[in-house]
Image (cartoon, rainbow, N blue to C red; front, side):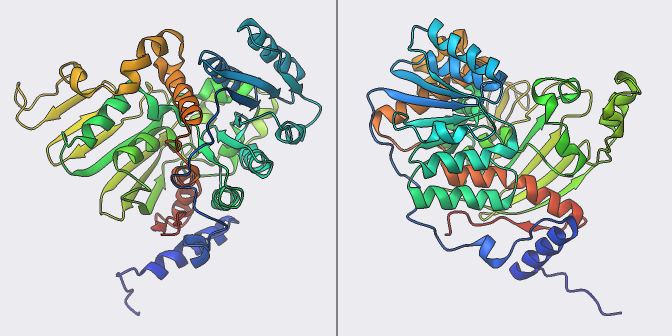
Length: 440
């Protein structure tokens, strides 16, 4: 028998990814997918046009969309011009929220699945926020950009590598921003640690760990809201379906897409048992949900290597009984931070080799945004205030004509592990390359 060559080349990695994709009925990574020709000028560093008042359109006003809309309304110099949802009652509820905030009643779009296109065609909107089921993110973002609007998409920004390239190409072609609205990047701990990293407290970065570990079984089987669609990917995909809550903050720490880049990843999944057990315990035997077959492993674990040789452990688990956890760990040559609970160890600190709290570091390292509006954020904002900080910062960037903190290249890179993990799992945890969305 011929001995296998264990030294994988770049082309070998691409071939393994393509083979994995072929086995799953999804597109593999060609050379063009790894580094495709630009569709237009890069949007990295592209500034928003200054606006005294920021006029918003909102597509999707269910629970998440309405919640974020209320965060925007709490920021000065913001108008919600139009709202859209396939559920007329939800658009009417959103209109009432806007009126209650003392603003002019927004126009409502609810006629059919494509009525969002009419919202995108309006000439009195500066930015469109999209909070709909995942399969609609890419087409809605593309419609917004093609109609001259900057947009922000809830997480994950897109599902597939093709959709990653679609939003990158459209953003470059239209010179409109397509942001990923990753609220976890704006948490108080995350932003404080970002300051620590930037000021060298933890030394040179080596390794990170992150996750989305959240028991969502009750939500997944609900007969309303996300229960109407979020369970379905578990019937056809086996990988990390929701990578960005953990990966976004870590990407900021490691300066991904700035001075470093995701290079390749490997992934593996546990058995799929959690949804079956929940259904057996909670769902009547005559419910149509008993016809469903779940294939997504309960726990997916991936390892990412960056071009600088740093490593990242990325995990996903929403179908097991457990406390909420994003891990949020960053290890450097001088110390380590890990969340849930938030704790830090810096070489030489008092107390020996024991964790310390962040209390002693707050005065020096708390992020300026949290110093400025943290009290208001904690009072009014969701998820501990991070939602308000996210909205406040976006409006600040538009009003002052700044580049956004997160652009379409981040949206693509942080969302890509969804399909890349599926490809690696299907190929027995073979490594798969990240596309070079910034094309070098």
